[in-house]
Amino acid sequence: MKLKLTFLLALALTTITGFTQITLTAADVAIIGQSMTQVHDTLPDASILAGPGGQNQTWNFSALNDHESYSFAAVAPSATPYADLFPSADVAAIENDSSFAYFEKDNDGLRLLGIYGAFPTEAGTIELAVRSTPPMSVLRFPTTHNDGFSEQYKRTFEFNGADAGLPVDSFRVVSTVLRSVQYDSYGIMTTPAGSFQVLRVKETEISTDTSYILFMGTWTEFPSDPITDITFNFWTKQGGIGFPVASIQADEFGNTVSATWLRDFAVSPTHENTEQVAFDLFPNPCQDLLSLDLPDSFNGSIEVFDFMGKKVAAKNMESHFGSLDTSALAPGMFVAVLKNAENRVVGTKKFEVSR
Image 1 (cartoon, rainbow, N blue to C red):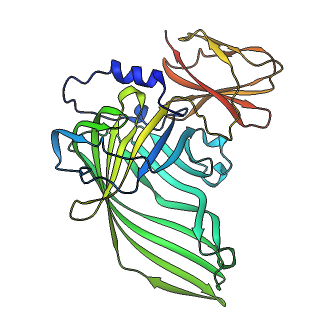
Image 2: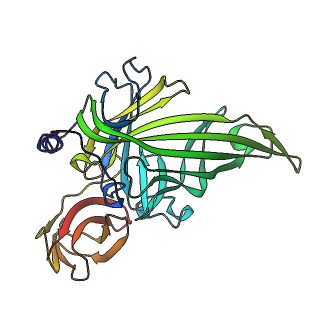
Image 3: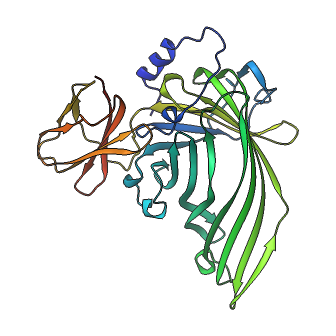
């Protein structure tokens, strides 16, 4: 999906007249119904540098290239096949219709519980869950300049040796991660997609991997040396994005190793394997009743989520027209998720309750 006209208009209407400090809250990020395409520049130009921190900075990343692309969609965990592995998740992210990340979000922060996906091995690929214990803090709210935090967590996965072509019974990796996060700068970022007001988040992770091999009933431990990763994420909430418009990985000397940037953004999921059906809801904004115009002979359900990812209403739908009682909902923005009889997401729409 290319940049849509509505997205370009939103950027044009959000005119940058000066440097503005950004504060991110739970209502700004990980919103169900968002979809985007992030692209990877495998050979960043020499001009792509994090630079110094501080106020009123400018970054010109217009030389970024599009070498590899990745699609993302934020959905309700119930719309994914592995939600039972992460029961406390209230937001999920689908990458390339094959990998799934599970998050919990509240007014204090956005935290990664773990991911499920296919990972390369010498024998091909293997599907497994990678868990974060305790959950890794992506952001803590409110996210504002000159703030930050430190934490420690463990990242764990395990699989049968035969599944990966290894001559062992089982293989486990436990990564102990020391994580330091600083909201160290704000200003204007320019990428091939446009110019954005951004808050820069510097993340430093020191991880120590310990591998465990089970062979003939005995576990053997193989520790490794610590590895330091430094990432700079440039977050924006301009145009309702709530996502980094660019990210770079740097070495300890400040040299850029790799870079990604946000190419496309939309407000409804469009991943290829998800059937999309046309439906309408009105009035929008509504007060106490939301009317729905559904496909003929539709059989399924409608679920409503607030922007914290919490399900706040649900109703079975078995006709062309229907309605949903919204009198118990607080004023604000919501996402209606339409599901078919097989409980698959087939459409989403945003609406507002206003009184």
